[in-house]
Length: 174
Image 1 (cartoon, rainbow, N blue to C red):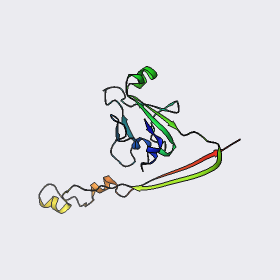
Image 2 (spheres, rainbow, N blue to C red):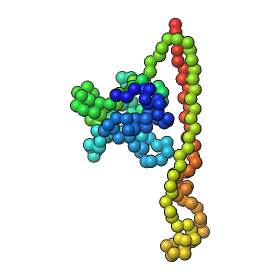
Image 3 (cartoon, rainbow, N blue to C red):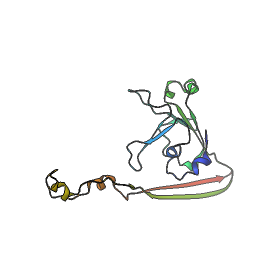
Image 4 (tube, rainbow, N blue to C red):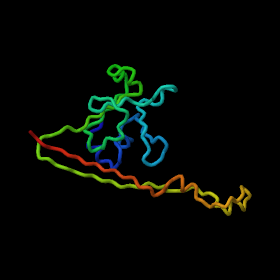
């Protein structure tokens, strides 16, 4: 179990990423390693070749596909069920484990509006050493096709910006 305050304290853009390293036996990885890519969570490892190994996500009692879109600041707690108790409660849908997310509830009081904006970029810290166009031709590895495009840089899309905006309205009464 993880309290929402611990998740909100981690400066990440996704609740799934905030879980990384917080619960023993839970693996959090990106789908293809690209910035902003979807996150895979494995609670019980990869146990099936033909079926999904994804955990069952339950948010406030409702089943959902993932928790990537829930801001960490909106979470009250996350509980992870890894053992047979998950199967006893949720049946075969819980073969990959269960992630229970409880979001914060409304409280009576003055109405407050808050805004959080994040702007981030990712870049490779160390690029591999590769031959440039001239060295490629000089060493006889290939022929000059007239292009000196940095294909590695094109694939990485270095300097691309990611942004996230969260507007929260809370409080009120009758």
